[in-house]
Image 1 (cartoon, protein in one colour):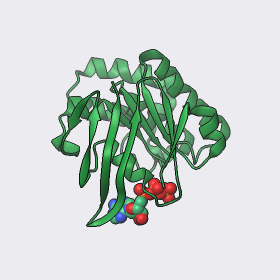
Image 2: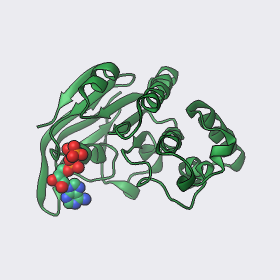
Image 3: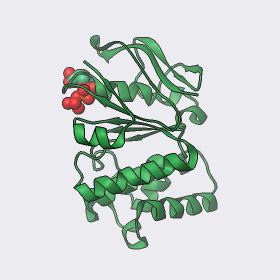
Length: 215
Ligand SMILES: Nc1ncnc2c1ncn2[C@@H]1O[C@H](COP(=O)(O)OP(=O)(O)OP(=O)(O)O)[C@@H](O)[C@H]1O
C-alpha cells in the first residue's frame, strides 16, 4: 500500500525537468518535499497526481503500475489521489458557488444528488464553511475561505493520498493551522497518506514525519 514514483524522468516539450526521481508516500504518513525553486517539485506532484505523463519511469498506486495520465486513467484510480494547489483562485471556476465547487468532483463521477448533498454538508462542516459562505462565488470570499473550499473539494472522494503543493503558503497562520488540522483529522479517519511541498522549514518540521529533498 503506497503511492510511489519509480525513477521518474519528466519534462515539457523535450526539456527535461526531473531525472530518475523516486519517492513514496505510505498510508497515514506525512512526507515533506523541498528543494530549490524550479527544481521540479510541482512537476513531480503533477506526475504523482496522474496529470502529467513521465517520459520514463512510472507511478504505482498500492502496488499497481498506472499508465497514461488525466482522462486516460480510470476515474476509480484518479479519485484515489487528491490535490491541493497554492492558489485557490487559479484552481477554481469563478462562476461556481462554493457548494458547486465542492460538489464538482462528485458530480463528475455521477454520484446521486442526495449523496452529493450529504457529503458536501459533511465537508463544509469539517472545513468550517457556513451556509452563508457556501452560497457565495469565489470573488465574494477570502483566499483562506476559498482554500478551505478547495480542501473540501480535494477530500470529496475520500482520497487515499493527498498532495499539497505549497497549499498553505498564501494563508495567514491561523488558516494555515486550520487547514493542516483538517488534513490531520482526515488522516486519523482513514489513514490518508499526505505529501506536503513547501519552502518553509518550520512548517515541514511541525507537520511532516520525514522530508525528502529534490535537487
Ligand atoms: N507547463 C509547463 N511548460 C513548460 N515548462 C514548465 C511548465 N511547468 C513548469 N515548467 C518548468 O519546469 C521547471 C520546474 O518547474 P516546477 O514548477 O515543477 O518547479 P518547482 O520546484 O515546483 O518550483 P517552485 O518551487 O518555484 O514552485 C521550471 O523551469 C518551469 O519553468
